Length: 320
Ligand SMILES: [Zn+2]
Image 1 (cartoon, rainbow, N blue to C red):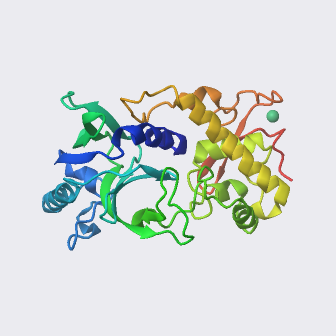
Image 2: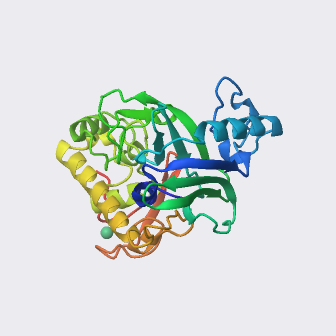
């Protein structure tokens, strides 16, 4: 499942290739990849099936037609990201192309006439002033992901919407999530205060997207291991110093994942691989039940907190 570093790799890879490009044509091969796209003046979420994957034929056709019409001819701005939300502002329209990668979504940059990848759902043919004709494809095996055109709304703090953009705006569908720790406008002091105000376990607080976004289960476990914090520690018991250290450790884990992901793509062909991540060989705690802790050789243990598995070292992450 793509997490923040994987989505950031996609954003950074797409930026030079698509910023300033014009959308020449759009083809929706499979309207199920538009389940989060709400056509202007029509169709509510009722057309979407219980698991969010199926879409009735009428709703699908309506969404596809609206999506193609609004996107064709648009000039793409610099891609932006907050947490795992990725969006591309559409020139002058006050709208953005929003991508949710879900479990297995991929944005693939391809040569104009390249053959389709497996699980191809949506094609965008684009023309860039310097790179010429390219194709931006959305592929998604499991269809938990989606593309959508969404309205940009002003950010409540008046700062840029996320990493990669100067616009103080964010798609409405992403407005509810907090800034992520890699965001230049992230407020460290507010995060520390917010974390220490939580009654929940620190692990649960780290996964709360309204406090801080983009920290998934893997990165939370790794940051807690580095900070020597038991995942079940009540967040309210953290000192200011420890809360700051945890934030720093989180950024460290992201930085390492990004550095290792930096070799997995080139400027021409970008993709997110939802399968085994390139970061897997750098994990110290996550998914390593029974494997000796790299620090003290004690076997890593697993507990369940608020329904999520947590991996930790019972010796160097003691509960206080
Ligand atoms: Zn240990």
